Amino acid sequence: MTKISSSSLFCSCDTVFGKQSVNRPPTPEEDVADDFERDELTIRESINIKFVESGEKENLMELVRDRLVECGWKDEMKIACREHVKKKGRKDVTVDELIRVITPKGRASVPDSVKAELLNRIQNFIVSTAL
Image 1 (spheres, one colour):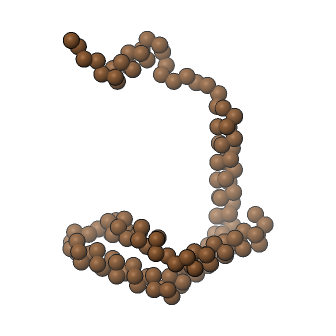
Image 2 (cartoon, helix red, strand yellow):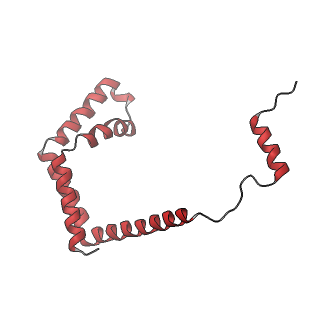
Image 3 (tube, helix red, strand yellow):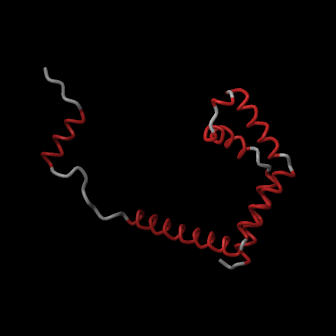
């Protein structure tokens, strides 16, 4: 008895019946979703350009750096990095691995007050530039 794999069966069906997929016009929901994604990217790009051109992006980056130092977050991350290197051995740790291991902890430990201040500044900037 010959065993037929499902992949060879599909290939045979494709050969007999022609194309595997049928070209059909997109449904209205797909058109709306595509348009929304394009518009969203355009808005996002526009906001990013305004942030960069105005210098506000750099100001916000500096604000976040300062707040993370003030609250001790930067020191916590240094300690976490040192502990990981000590545990694994200095020669057995790459920068990429260190980033991969520490990033989730770092993101989770950013104080809510820093996130809220950043969000508030971003919202105020967007409103003030009438985007």
